[in-house]
Amino acid sequence: MHVLVVNCGSSSIKLDVLDPHTGERAATARVERLRSPGCALVMGDAVVPIPDADHAAALAVALPRLLEGRPVDAVGHRVVHGGARFDAPTLIDDAVLEAIAALSPLAPLHNPANLAGIVAARALLPTIPHVAVFDTAFHATMPRRARSYALPKALVEKYGLRRYGFHGPSHAWVAQQAGHYLKEDLRGLRLITCHLGNGASVTAVEGGRSVETSMGMTPLEGLVMGTRAGDIDPGVLLEIGRREGLDVAGLDRLLNHQSGLLGLSGVGNDLRDIEALAAAGDEDCRLAIQVFAHRVRKYIGAYAAVMGGVDAIVFTAGIGEHSALMRHRIAQRLDFLGARFDEDRNRDVRVSAAHPVAEFSEPGSRVRLLVVATDEARAIAHDAALLSAGAQSVEAASRIPIAISARHIHLTRAAVDALFGPGHALTPYKPLSQPGQFACEEKLTVVGPKGRIANVRVLGPERPECQVEVSRTDEFALGVDAPVRDSGDVANTPGVTLEGPAGSLTLSKGLICARRHIHMHPDDAARFGVKDRDVVEVAVDTDGRDLTFGDVLIRVSAKYRLEMHLDTDEANAAQLSGGDGGVLASTGGSVRLRRRSVGFDAE
Image (tube, rainbow, N blue to C red; front, side, top):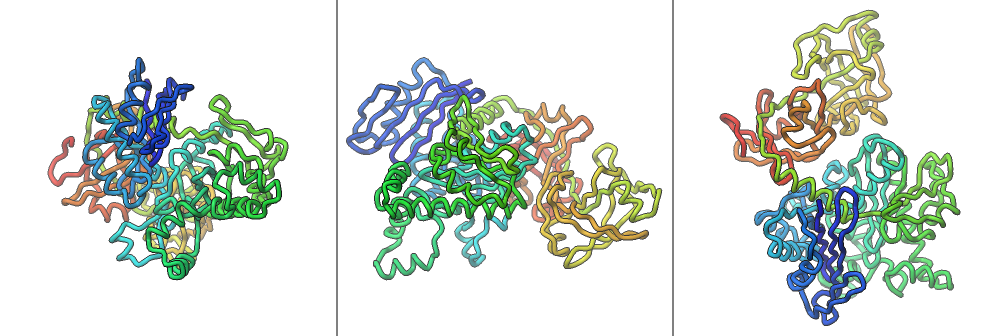
């Protein structure tokens, strides 16, 4: 299979034809200086002038040359901003095009260019699937506390103000590559990925999901970048606006095009030039390097705190992959995290498609320091291939029952003895939908720092570790910040006290909010075209309201019975109750659930 990846910027276009499984490029091309007399197509050593070409005219010249004798099965398009609507790769139709256009005010430098490329490519290649892969999608898993701005609620809701994050395909790709290199399941890792280039961002990746990132509603927030200021006191902008008479457009130019490394150094935004001048004694260039490194190091420390630790710090993109000096400055003084770097290994770092990962931490360093070659085009191709294949082959649809997971407790043998007395056997109250599991007659009181919840039911059978599953409402009542986790994943979780008829037991860990998930038998997974650990989107249409649950985990086992689990808060919000059901179908590459008031059928 070959996928064409189209990455349209405001002044350039990057084109790759590649095998999404191996990453092997069949062909590449670049269009530079769009809408200028110097606009040209570059393919290998060949340069084809296309003066003043816009996206449509440039693609009309580039695609026939690039695809000559090279059939492709799908087209993947990078789209920078997906807003709140798009949290997964999406098949492009006219409605999706309209939605991308509506999001242009959130990314005025990017989405219009992305849209122009999509329109032109669809016109030239109308018979194959086109897929939009969004920079913001990977960060859709950020919890509300990480994505919310402290602004009046009315304004937030009126204008959709929230933090979205960017560089998603890159952060997701390098996190996956780091997991392969470390020979660890990504679900058990805490990673900090540093995408450092002309645009730069840092992401906290816990359990394979983005839980924090430095860019916000737009790519302006966070790190110092080539020409972007990054974090800045809004009062500075108010003062500059008043004193310099700058309007909104003037402030936009200042923050996006005149700041960052360019503004600090006064010589340009290319770090290679800044490093050379700094070595020659230029104090402004030295300050630019120091501020850039300081900001990255500050975010690394913050994200280690957010995740309660870190297993590896990953550097990628132009600066992260190629500047040993910047890696040195960022990694110094991280010993307190257990991250110790080897200067010789740092200087010798070389990464490529054939050797995508290099390590520069000292042997025995508790936190590993890695450089990973990013490959956004391959990440986009991979998503486009999966989605287009699924769209063509998954036609089956089936009713799926919904189960509401109320708060409950799983206990070890030792915990049963401590709470109910030595040798006590859990008493089945009624069987649960999943084979072999049952609700017990036994109930306990859960006690947190702030409050207590009585009559929380115990579920059987006994487990290797104690686990208390609560809703968001419950965690506020208890006064505990419970992370969203897969059932059984209790590492680095808070503890609570359990009170039973024979005594009390204080747990050092085990309190979680269960991640929404779907249980599937292997036969169901084969029918729906998904596999264990896939993450899908679930749309619930109830009483005329269309709600979307993202980040739904697929769990496949021969012992499972088909069922979707939501916690009580989410079920209440969707006006669902136990016994409701829906239909799973492959729609735009996302598994979607539709609930109807009477009967169930495919969309």
